[in-house]
Image (cartoon, rainbow, N blue to C red; front, side, top):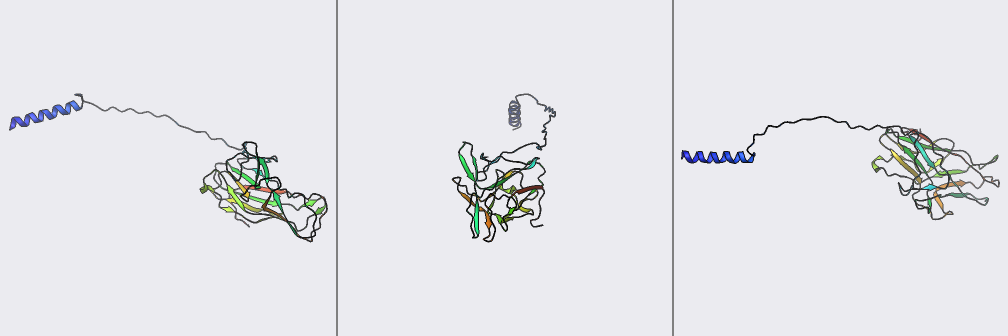
Length: 245
């Protein structure tokens, strides 16, 4: 019995030695370090081209020349509003703006809802507020008394994840001589590029009008033949504000 046990133990020891290749191993480890880095620079002098407000990220070249603001938090584009040629009337009338005309990436005509585009490349994620005000409609010394410009159907679009969508989106904005909030992004909202369009449907021709951009002229308003113009001022500030304050 003793000899049998000895043979079995010897065989087991031999098998263990073969599994290790018959060599006694000692583990030696060595390590060293390397670096990874990234260098960010300010986008203060950058620009962002207008994008299609109904198809975020798609190229859209407006017919009118953009007049962007500067800085890493900027307004890239704001549509001009054209209510066309109208016949003088003694009745109250609502007039609607033509769609913003431009071309897509293939050069084909596009008629998109009137819009404003904002880019926040500040990297601060502090949020921002977009406001609008407007002067009276004037034709020389003549004023279109009582005329009321209303922006409605405010629709936000971006290639950014919807979780970053600005929380405050105002509708039925009556544009007057004091600032009215259009869009307000809280902290951790509104990063990247966003369009705020008035309506979400496009037109098909230069004669189509956007029912979300309305100019109301009362019946009693005096009208002098000629072109009345108003200047809309779009103001973008860092940080959110409370609408109406």
